[in-house]
Length: 548
Image (cartoon, rainbow, N blue to C red; front, side, top):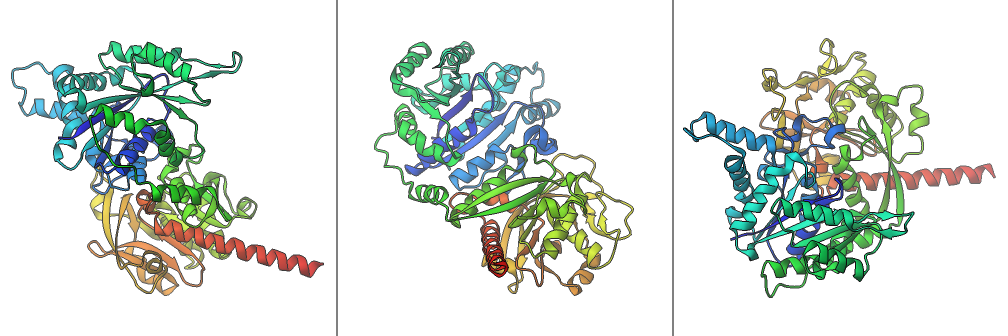
C-alpha cells in the first residue's frame, strides 16, 4: 500500500509549498521510491481553465487534457514524469461530483452534508493515486493557508485520514514563515507557533515543520519552535531563500527533510540519493559561458507566473547550452510600427507568447515582422504561431486584412479560423482542443533537425487553427508547413525559407520541458540566439576596426 504525505501552509500564501512538495518528492524518487504529487485547490472553479492569467498565473495542461494548477508544472519538471487529471482537484470538482451523485439518487433519503459526503469525496480523491498500485508515496499539497474558510473541508479530510491510517503511513509537513524584523534584528517564531496551533485546533498534528526564512535558523530557534509546536528538533527544517528553485532539493537534502520523513514512514534500508544529473544541471546553470537576451513578447508580462513554464523551459535550455538566458519582458500592447525598432533592438531572439483575445495582437504582429525582416531567431507559441501566419499573409501575400476570426470575424482573409467542432461549443470550461496530439514532421525541415524524429506528441490548448483554405498560397510563397496532425489535417508547425531560425508551433512545447529532458525547440532556439549574438558581436567588432 502507498504511504501519504500532506503538505500544508500557514501564516501567508506564496511561501512555496509546491516547490517544497516537489523537492521532497525528488529526494524520495532519488532514493528509489515511486512518487507522485497532487494538488488540492480550495476555489469553486472546476478547474483553472476559465481563470484569467492575471488571477491565477498560467493554466498548465496535462497529456490527458486536464487544465490544472501551475504547480503541476513544477511536479513534472522536478520528477520528470507526467501528471494527469487525477493530480489536480478543486473544491468545485468535489462539489460537482457530490451534487451529481445526489441528483442520480446515490444518497437517496439522506441529507447531503459537508461531513461525511464532501469529506468522503475528498478522501477518495486523495487516495485515488495511492490505490492505483503505481506509487510507493503520494504527496498531496493543500492550496491556500490554514485558517482559510474554503480550506476547512480539506483539512478535515486530512484529519480523518491521519486518524484512519496507521501512524507510519501518514505524515503531515507544515510550511510556515519565520519573519525577520529589521528594527529588532531578530527572527520571530510566534507566527509559526500560531499557525501550528491553529492547525492543531482543527485536529491535524504536523510531524515536520519547514520554516521559510531569509536568515539562517540557529539551534536555539529550532528548539524553541520544536518545543512550542510539539515536534522533535530534527523535525524543524530550515528553508532559506535560494538563488534558484532547483537548488531547493539539495538544500532540503542538507537539512535532512527526506530522512526525517522516511523515518516517520518506517522506511528502512533506503538507498543513497542518486542526484548526479540534477547536480550536473545545477553546475551548468551556475557557470554559463555565454549570454543571450531574449525578448518575450506577451500580453500578461506584468505577472511572471503567467508564463511560468516558458521561463522555466528557458532555464533548462540555457543550462544545456551553458548560456545565461536573460529574458526581457515586452508588453505587446505597447508595440507599434513607430517604436518597434527602439523596443526590440539589441535582442538575440524573439519569442511571441500564447494568449487569448484581441488586446495586444497588433504589437505581436509587428514583432513577428521585425524578426522576419531582420533575420532574428524567432519562436512563436500557439497565438504566437498564429500571429506569424497573419503577418506573412499581410506583408508577403499582400492581404492587408488577413486576420484570425477570433479578433476579426468579418475579415475577408480568415487565415486563422475556428475549428468546425468548436463552432457549436457554448460552455467555455474544458472545451478547447486540449491535451496531447500526434504530429508528423517533414524530414526536410528545421523541425526535424530539432526533434530528430518524424513522429512527435505535444500538448495543446486552443480553439482556432490555421485555415487550410489558404494552405497552397502560403506554401507557394515560401512558408513551410513542416508539422501536420494527420488525423485532423491540421497544421502544427510552420517555418520560413531563407531564415536562420524561424519556427511557430500551434502547441505548447514549454509544458514538456523538464530538468532532465529540456525541450529540444527551446534548446535549439537558445543555440540559434547564441550564434546570432556571436555573429552580431563579430560585425560590430569589424565595424569598429574599419572606423579606426
